[in-house]
Amino acid sequence: MNTMTDSNNLAVQGRQKMTPSEAFVETLVAQGVTDVFGIVGSAYMDALDLFPQAGIRFISVAHEQGGGHMADGYARVSGRHGVCIAQNGPGITNFVTSTAAAFWAHSPVVVVTPETGSMTLGLGGFQETEQLPIFSKITKYQAHVNNRARMAELTGRAFDRAMHEMGPAQLNIPRDFFYGDIECEIPRPLTIERGAGGDASLDQAAALLAKANFPVILAGGGIVMGDTQADAVALAELLQAPVCASYLHNDAFPSRHPLWCGPLGYQGSKAAMRLIARADVVLALGTRLGPFGTLPQHGLDYWPKDAQIIQIDADPRMLGLVKPISVGICGDAGAAARALVARLEGKTLACSANRDARLATLRDERRAWEAELDGWTHEKDPWSVEVSAQSAHMHPRQMLRELERAMPDGAMVSTDIGNICSVSNSYLRFERPRSMFAAMSFGNCGYAFPTIVGAKVAAMDRPAIAYVGDGAWGMSFGELQTCVREAIPVTAVVFNNGQWGAEKKNHVDFYENRFIGVNLDRQPSWAAVAKAMGAEGVRIDKVSDVGPALRAAAAAQRDGKTTVLEMMVTRELGDPFRRDALSLPVRHLAKYKATAAK
Ligand SMILES: Cc1ncc(C[n+]2csc(CCOP(=O)(O)OP(=O)(O)O)c2C)c(N)n1
Ligand SMILES: [Mg+2]
Image (cartoon, rainbow, N blue to C red; front, side, top):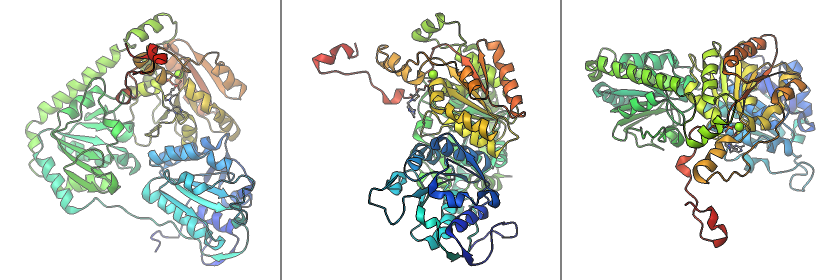
């Protein structure tokens, strides 16, 4: 039974004769799709032909991976489905990385994968590969249209599952199944409401929180995806509890709120780490407690191993998966927060007794971390000191602080995988959810730029800014073509340090500076490349130019202009990503002895 009322649904009603292409497109209409990203292909041309009359914009991209990331960014900012489509075979395999990234970003992306024709499947015809196994581990659901008469049903199900399970769904369609005559009804979206969780577990959680002396809230992506920040704020204020953001979800809690203490995880906030280390009860609100997000950082092993952990997540498989927990609640973060407020309001809370002392600690930690960031203008390890002494370029941290100060209100910021992008985690603060679009756990270079392009399509009124290292930029700058061609104005801040820095840091720390494949010598001027591609390009050499340049580029978005700000920075490098996973080199063979750790 469809629970959505149909009055505003523009799709055709009732059972009737149509072609499968019409059934497919009408189901998109029924699901509220207005934008689809991809590269044109004969495999789905019959359906594409209907897009204009259906009110669907086809955004023609430079590379399918970019289109997949755009669908991801679009979904992350709008809370609606992101949709991408491509040619069978090579167009579809180009979606693999973006689909895996969307999987770990919990994005409701529908990946439409037209397949080789059903009558030649298995014969090794043109552009043929088995498309279902490839995506089997990176999707929440796979629909295969095994009969053209089921086109609408399976299309609708792929959309519903993507939203219900918050992740990519694949819709695989043999290309000959777009043609023919069928009779069907267009399914309406199946809206399923999620509740707060079980009463007994909520009671238990409320009892733990009432007794807590130092409760700390860990605000996760569930708050962002549920658009439920106000509920998290209400619960935090009731408890007067410090709120840390989970790794790369800096937009889960407003940074100007007095209880905010910043993100945990790699290059996160020491204030957040020091406060959660003191917790006797942690309320993990809408977070899977991913293993990478709570690793020791800055020399602080901050996860409170003796604390009682209450974990709330909409996916029961995430409860207690990574960290031992005391109470697991399968529910919507916002609904659970409201249910906890209802249980705790008017009750005596143990933490009220030490409220002033706790708030003083919070203020002290926040102040200390801000002061440390103000003074931390450059990296201090010997290699960084040496390379920056030889350079006239900007220190990355100073540049990042300037970007933070100049960040326009309501900005959406995507960040790539790289050393400088990672360091930016300390300097990214947001007042509203759906503002930060980091490459999440999949961690692929080349994520940030196309993702912000998709985000901009969904929110044309918001400034859209991507932080990208120069190596990752080399992978993704092709989508400047999409910005120019499709009039999608964004700002790319490209950190030119002439290296694949994050990996080079491992050479410095573990391999005695034996640099292999990490220097990006003889790069083009990225500002000049941008201009050649029809965008604006500005090279920034001085810290004092950073803020004005960002403000001007963000303002230029209102005039439809995409700008690349090429930031000339030193080769210094912050802490490495995977200190947890590397070891000093051991060599047994005489031939390789010279590379053994001394
Ligand atoms: C697709 C992909 N390839 C390789 C890597 C491994 N990797 C992680 S960070 C990094 C270096 C990033 O360099 P750059 O974008 O220039 O940023 P920087 O570290 O210099 O700030 C690489 C190669 C990856 N994460 N993703
Ligand atoms: Mg670099």
